[in-house]
Amino acid sequence: AKEAGHNRYQFYSEDMTARAIERLSLEHDLRGAVERGEMFLVYQPQIELGTSRVIGVEVLMRWRHPARGLISPVRFIPVAEDTGLILSIGEWGLRESCRQAQLWYERGLLNACISVNVSAVQFRQTDFVGIIENALQESGLAPTNLELELTESAVMQGAEPALNKLRELDALGVKVAIDDFGTGYSSLAYLRQFTVDRLKIDQSFVRDVPGNNDAEAIAAAIVAMGLNLGFRIIAEGVETEAQAEFLQSVLCKEGQGYLFAWPMTAIEFEAWIAGWQNRAGS
Ligand code: C2E
Ligand code: CA
Ligand code: CA
Ligand code: CA
Image (cartoon, rainbow, N blue to C red):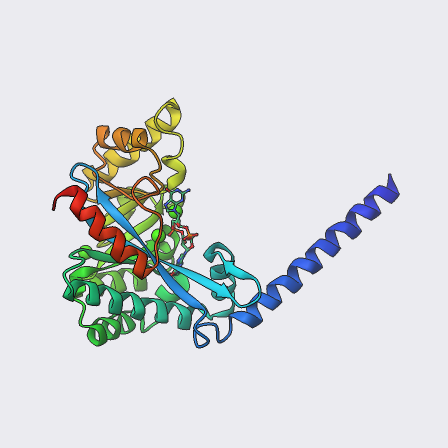
């Protein structure tokens, strides 16, 4: 038994060493990835369920590593956050998103909000609002066409400065959405004091509807409370017609997910939206 324990320990520590090395190498390669042109953005439409209208577009980041191929943001964003690299990578993503959205707006391809994911580390920067203003100014994008997706924990950390930043963003006309809503610790009543426009119901609450009674009750309750407090509600991870129908039945009017479209490169998105608008007849 002692030997097994020893082996188990050794296995564990080798595993941890391998993971530490893997992380160091990711960290190393992440430096300069933007400058080398390895980062790119993909776009996923947000749909008004009743009309199939495109009411927004979420921007998601991708890293094409020269040796490892495509790396998911689930892997590289935490590394970028731990190293502080998220500040420069995130700012690049924000500026590029605004530039692309304004280009589409000018070409008449998109008349909707662009939603950019913002890390808590970025939001905590003293000059966060200044960075947003710069990106808007340089791109010419109207502030009302920009939405920032923040997680509950990002908004809850250090209530006072966060509150001020949200007020400043609101004064600019920039919208704020709470991402992965329902997975954190914030109470809806507490959230109400923030100038938040929209709640994004996490896909974990969408996965098991309809059919699972608990999942249905939770999803319905989140939507009802959110609406009562005056927030717009969007569901993420909508993959089936049945999910979209259930969401509509509990008065969730907006959705995003593979049912409508996968996240697409800018070129793919342009082709997709042309086809979508023809089908929807708008
Ligand atoms: P998130 O913001 O919650 O984004 C939703 C994730 O669900 C995305 O994964 C998206 O591709 C995926 N998704 C979309 N539709 C469906 C669906 O119907 N079913 C399922 N199962 N999944 C769907 P992705 O692109 O891998 O991004 C993962 C996470 O990485 C994001 O979660 C976000 O937290 C983070 N992230 C991505 N891009 C950025 C960025 O530019 N900045 C920051 N700070 N974080 C980012
Ligand atoms: Ca998001
Ligand atoms: Ca607002
Ligand atoms: Ca999510």
